[in-house]
Every structure is written in structure tokens, then in C-alpha cells.
Length: 320
Image (cartoon, rainbow, N blue to C red; front, side, top):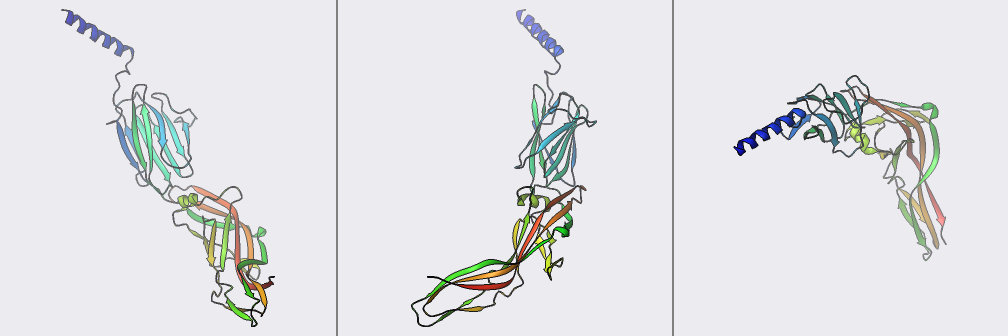
């Protein structure tokens, strides 16, 4: 008799509690504790149908090594705070220089995931956390890399083109001590042996991040046409440099095997300095890029500097 009374009392308590708060008995939102989803450029959208509607979007966690921001809006486009309330429909945009991704809670039991861009050169793993006050579950998301940007055009500001001709770069130096000899000594120098054309892309607005360009434009960076000087005037021929590398060296059209004999007299000690005479110019540039898949556009501004050797000069200075 006592056992029957206890059973009745226990059932009554359960019925009373469940009647007061229907969310205590929580259904699984997902088929398991975690769901795995892969998004790519060709399969960039996934809609997940939950078993129930008593859940909210709690958090989005990223495992990439780049800063990002999250922005939340209602389905009508009004800004809202994140995380959302339970059963509240809204959209979260996950944005960085390299990621464009959004999560939309559409209605009571639907979650839509959309990938627009992943420029990280590798898969990006994210966790989307959903749940309520009693239970939390996760969606493990893999974002595959998407198409890179391409260069549309390069514009140089010719009105601000500046030329500096006749500058000298020291290429090599050595000391020849012939003080104890009664005969002159002659040595052979190669003034163009180490000669290269030096290119510098400078960004006055901030530091240069080569990794950023490789993410936007690809691991093999595209080349752009750069000016040459002909009769002290800039012209665009076939000379190109990789855009995205701040400092680089190009071959100089000089005879690297050219030899010059230098003589130091008897009972003399001299320092031999080998210079290259260089032409230098600087010009502001603007590079326009776009993504052929998304239609997004960006541009970069800065200053291009070129130093190209054109001749040589050898100096013999007396050393005591």
C-alpha cells in the first residue's frame, strides 16, 4: 500500500513540473551530439532542419589565425545583439579580410549556412554552438578554399613620376697593398657581376603583408607591367614584377662577364671601390582586383620604386 502511494506521488510531481516548464524535457536538436558540415565553392549552402524549436544560436568559434568580426541582424536587416534569444530568427555575418560566411536562423527549426569566400589557402574549421538553458550541441563546419582574386588593371600616376639618374651604388671593395713591391700589380674586376635591378613596392598607409597578398591572389603571385626608362621617359614594355612581394630583384640587361683591369703602382697601397651607376624612379600606383566568382572588388595603392644599373665607375683611393 505504501509503495503504491509513493509511486502516485512521484508521478504527480513529474506531471506538475513538466506542466510548469515544458522545456525541462529537452529534445535532441541534432541527430547526435555533433553534426559535421562541409561547405565549398560548388556546394556553398546548407540548410539544417532541427527536431525542435526550443533552441537558440549561442556562439560561432573560429580556428583560423586571422582577426574577424561578427555582425548580427534581424531577417529584416536591423542590427541586433548576439547571441540571440531562444526561438529568435536572425542572421550572423562572420567577416574578415579572407572569410565571408553567414549563419541564418530561419524560423523555429531551420538553420542555413552560406559560404561566400574562404581565401585562407587551406580549410577553415569552425564550431557553431546551439542550445538552450539545459543543453548545448555543436555543428562542426569545414570551409573549403574558394577562388582567388585576379588583377583587373594597374594605373600609374604619371604626373607624379620622379626620376633620379646618375646615383651610385657600391658593389664591391678591396684593399691592395703593394708597398713592398717594386713592380705594379694588376687585378681583374667584374663590375656587373652582382648587378640586379631592384624593385620596391611601398605602402605609405601601413606595413606590407606578403601573406595577405598570397591569400587574396594565390600562392603564386601574379605579375604586373612596370615602367622602364627610355630617353629619360617612362614607357611600358614587357618588364614585369610580382605584385605582393615588397622587395624583389630583376635581371639587369648587362654583361656580367665584362672584365676591367685595375693596376696598383709599385710601393703603393690602394682601396679599390667598384660602383654601379643607377637610374632610379618612383611613381604612385593603384592596383584594382576582383573576384570572378563573387564579383567583389578591392584596390591597393602605394609607390613603386625602381633602381636599375646602367654603367660602372671604379675608384682607387690612397690608403696610408
